[in-house]
Image 1 (tube, helix red, strand yellow):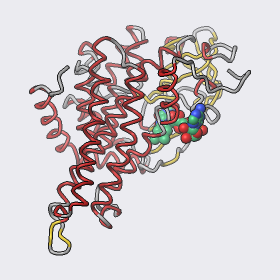
Image 2 (cartoon, protein in one colour; image 1 turned 90 degrees about the horizontal axis):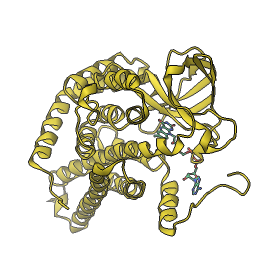
Image 3 (cartoon, helix red, strand yellow; image 1 turned 90 degrees about the vertical axis):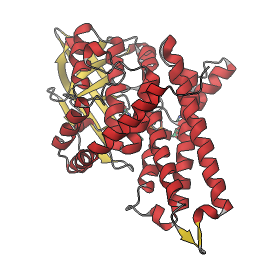
Image 4 (cartoon, protein in one colour; image 1 turned 120 degrees about the vertical axis):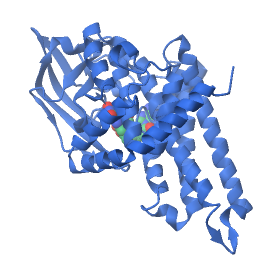
Length: 391
Ligand SMILES: Cc1cc2nc3c(=O)[nH]c(=O)nc-3n(C[C@H](O)[C@H](O)[C@H](O)COP(=O)(O)OP(=O)(O)OC[C@H]3O[C@@H](n4cnc5c(N)ncnc54)[C@H](O)[C@@H]3O)c2cc1C
């Protein structure tokens, strides 16, 4: 067990922070463009990030990725998110996002097309799991795929799909069989120009990102776009634990940014003729923020470091998720408090950081669902949440 980052990791973090700071103006344009429904600036940012080696961090080099281990990937997602959330989102989604399932379950042709496309900054892939009546109970999904000759015909609806309009494809969880059991669930890769697919106008979430509804009305895609034809929910969720760690690292980045800003601020702002940093009550808040940040990082890094022997452990991922999501909210909230009224104003960066981390208690499995999973592991029970007769 080694709790020190290596010299190479430290250098990588410093170099990445510098690169991202240079790309900041492009990232701001991309964020503003997305709000207007203009995705050209985002595509420009995506290309610039790819050229600077900031996408596909853990994707194999043979597909144009950077070939980094998961731990280094998460360290950089945290760093990039600390500089800017739009860039953090792009690195996460092209490294630990839906693309991970294509790398793990895809054919050689699918990997060559999608992993390479994502790493080069040509395309983006969103993830479609949630439905209006299948949120935490994801296996209640009804979106159906049936094979007709060389095509797959999809009917159904997804909701809350992050940044779908900013992406070119969705890796869609759907049901191939009609038994109603989880064993029907597989996945397909849907191009956003597929006939029969309509992407709604979406809703803006509290972090200022858009989430979209996807409507499938006999949507037709080639059979070659099947990723897993049923019996794949367990496998998909195992890969999804990397996605969870990627989004956890984004929360770490936002919390770290809040902490660093507040630490600086209390040493500059004066009240009662003294620095805010002179008041012991505020020093204790800073100390608690530091303890939470370090504990949150260690749980995340442990889950990532242990993937040398395979996919992330579900238990270690859930433990990290529950702690980090809670700690990140508290750290970001404390930062607002340390800045007083200025912390609450949109001109200062800390209120946005709170809004960024708040969703982490909901997406990727809510905190309650992760606690159910931890308890199931502790008690060695399946811990099914389903009403009798509905399993
Ligand atoms: C920022 C953000 C981004 C997202 N991005 C995507 C995306 O890209 N793709 C995608 O497919 N989905 C996405 N989602 C959707 C997300 O996965 C769901 O919102 C989440 O799974 C919860 O489902 P729900 O909203 O239907 O809530 P519900 O399942 O209705 O839950 C409501 C409340 O009940 C609690 N609850 C439910 N069941 C239990 C139980 N058994 N025990 C204890 N408590 C329970 C929950 O914890 C929650 O507090 C995103 C959501 C957010 C907020």
